[in-house]
Length: 114
Image (spheres, rainbow, N blue to C red):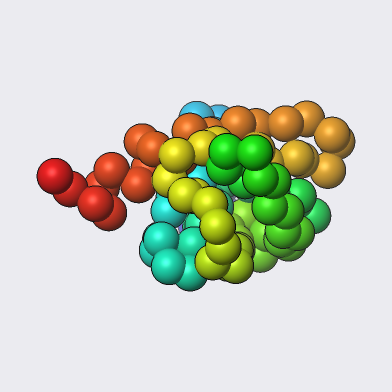
């Protein structure tokens, strides 16, 4: 009897874990943490992925490299310069070369309400 109960518990636990494994994973996202110095936080990237971030702000391109941590998150700080980081876009180049582009003005709006 104990053996049947243990087997039934393992099957139920397996079903529960299977549900977690198939749950939809949110897509990678970028958030502006601060505007001075300009700081981005990334979430939902592949764990330990080497990423290239390019901020397109007017005629200026500013590049940083980041490594996602074990949870797929990273923080990248850009130098303060002669550009408005909230008026452009940021492109994240994934390790496979695929670009993901995010519009910065939408992200900065929450930091500069008005």
